[in-house]
Amino acid sequence: MNKNVLAGIFLTLTTLGYAQDDATKYAGSITPEDLKKHLVIIASDSLEGRDTGSPGQKKAAEYVSKYFKSYGLQPIADNGDGTKSYLQKYKLYKRSFGDVYVKIDGKKYEFNKDFYLNGLLNVPDEMETPVVLAGYGIEESSYNDYANLDVKDKSVIIFEGEPKSADGKFLLSGTSEKTKWSGPVSWQQKAKLALAKGAKYVFIITDKSGDDLDKEIRQRAVMSRRFSAPTLKPVQESANGVASFVLTNEMAASLLKTSTQKLSKIKTDLDKTGKPLTKASTGSVAFRVERLSEIIETENVAGFMEGSDKKDEVLVISAHLDHIGISPNGEINNGADDDGSGTVSIIEIAEAFSKAKTDGKGPRRSILFLNVTGEEKGLFGSEYYSENPLLPLANTIADLNIDMIGRVDEAHKNDPKYVYVIGADKLSSELNTISEEANKKYINYKLDYTFNDAKDPNRFYYRSDHYNFAKKNIPVIFYFTGVHEDYHRPGDDVEKILFEKQAPIVKLVFYTAWELVNREERIKVDSHKE
Image (cartoon, rainbow, N blue to C red):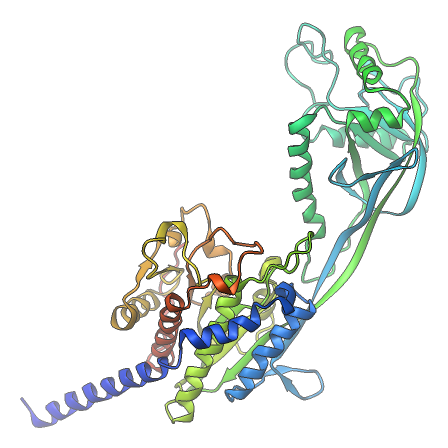
C-alpha cells in the first residue's frame, strides 16, 4: 500500500480518536451530583412550582441566566434599548372567570359545584331579575310554551329535554325519536328562542341527579377551562351571546319558591297533558359572572455559544423552565421531573461545552441553549421562539429537546436504563443514525421507540416544545422517560429523581450534540414521516 495513503489513514484514525477522547472528557463533567445541586434549587418550595410568569418562574430564569453567564455564553435577546439579554421576553393574554355565583333568597351557590354554565357570559356586577318558568322552553306549531307567557326583561327557567308521554313516545315527533329540543346542544336552541322572546337570561333545570350530576359538573368544570386558556395574541371574546345557567332541581325549586316534589309534578303534568303551562311559576334570582383580563409577562432564557468555522449554522438544545405552580388547595407542584430534569440538563450540557471551548475544543457550529416557558400552557415559549427566532431558522440544523428524564414509568420499573426517543427519524434519517451510534458507542441504554409510532394514542410527538421546531421543518429529537404517578402532582419532588439514571441520558444528548456540531456536513432533511 502507498506510504502516503497509510499516513492519511493513520492521521484520520488519530483525529477520530482525539475527537472521541475529547467528547468523553467533557461529558465527564456531567454528573449526578451536579444535576442534583441545580435541581434542589429549581424544584424547591421557594420557587412555588414555577407557574408561567410567576415570581418563582422568574427566579428560575435568573438562576439559569446566572450559570449561562458564568459559562461565557452570549446574551442575544434584544432588550429594545440596544443592549442584549439572556431573556427573550414575551406576553400571554388570559381571560378567566372571576367571581361567579347564583344567589337565591340570600343563599349563594357556587360555580362548578352547585351549578355550571353553558356558553360564555359577562355580568361584571351582581344582577337581579324576576324569573318565570317556561316549561320546556319550546315553540312549535303544535306546542308553544310561550303562547301565554311574557318573558320580556326576565330570566326564564326551562326543563331540560322535551315532553314525553307515558308510552315512551315524544310528543313532538309522535315516535321514540327525539327532536332538536333534546340532546347535548339543544340548550342552544332553547336559549336562542328565549332571548328572541325578550328574555334576559336563561336557566335550565338538569335531568341529572346524584353521582350522574356530580360527574356532569366535574366534566363541565374541566370544559370551562377553555374559557381561561391563555393565548399569544389578545382575543376579543363575545361574552354576552347565547348562554345558560344549568341548575339542579333543588336550586330551581328554591328559585321558584316551591318544593322539588311540586316542581317534579309540574313536569309530569306537562308530559301527561301534552299542553304547555297555563299558570306561570315565578320568583327572582341574583347572580354574577365576572370575566377578568390578565397579561402574563414571561420569558425564554437563551444562551448562545458561537461556533468556529461553521458558526452560521446552529443547534438548539431545549427544555421548558415552567411548571404548573400551586394547586387550588395550596399544595406546591415542584415539577422536579417536569421539567426540572430538563432544565438542569441544559445547564450541565452548557457547562460541558463551555469547558471544551475554554480548552480550545469549542464546537464548529454554534449552539443555542434554550430554556422556554409557557410549555404547560400550550407550548407557547417555543411557539414564540419559532415565530420570533433569535437566530435564523433556515440555519438551525436541529433541536434536541429534553422533557422529563428523571424518573421511570411503569413499563420500565425493572429496567431503568432506557430513554424514549421520539421524532429522531421524522425529518432526518441521519439524525436518527447519529443518535443510535452515540448511544451504542457511549451509553448503551435501551432506546425505546414506542411513542415514536404515529399510531400511538398518547401523541407525545406533538406534546412538547420540539414540535414547534418540527413544524418549521427542523429535525428534532425528544428525550423522555415517560409519565409516572406524580405527573402534574405535588409528589413530583427532587427526592424521587434517579440522578444516576438521568446523568447517562444527559450525556447521550451531549454526545449527539457533539457529533451534530462538529461533523463536516450538516444533517439532511430527507424524511417526512408523520
